[in-house]
Image (tube, rainbow, N blue to C red):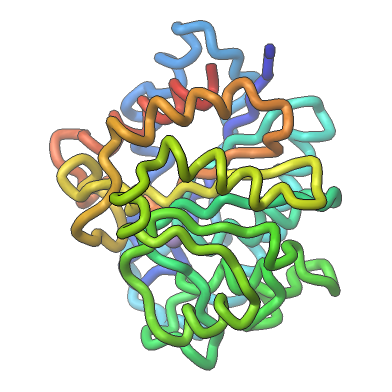
Length: 291
Ligand SMILES: [Mn+2]
């Protein structure tokens, strides 16, 4: 398969309390990640950086005031992803905090499934969130729950049906999230099950699960799903994650899958990175997915 890639650096971290992840995409440029992929024969048509109206750069702004910025950014991201698809390119979106998933996945009008690979469930609503941070809400929003600015960015109906979403690697979450997801009957492969059964068995099963009744799917990969030693540069590190040696080989199949709509990689925080370990992990992930 000869995909042409449109890489979109989503340089917004207004959804998180610590806002350094807005520098993530620029750090990848500094590390010549995209040049290196091109040198290996990856056909990247364009690398486009999207910035929010206002850069945070660790500015103290109450979370409530960042909601209009998140909405505006998601609308522009949605249009950018749409434009890439219309031009025949495959969109690869690099965050930025996870609230940008609302923009990425609103871009598609066909019904699709979504794999959410993440240490967290990101399924809070404004009623259940302990922190108020919007990056804890995008999965609920795509299911049509929570703050209208996120749950109904442009569409009246939810972007995803509960049967078309599956979480992999969850190990840090709150009761409000598991209550919503079990009420909706959304599939969650918690970290215990990943350790027990292994991703080699779980990933194909999860893809089959989210593809029930649809012909396409997407992948939203939060870097915090990995082991902290291997991915220290993330917004919200959690102990006990997935080893890259287990996940990376399985990502190769995404490069060959014509059913895949887009790939999204989130929460890279270069300020927390150690010896560019996380930057190089991003490079390795993109090498697998963008072959
Ligand atoms: Mn996340």
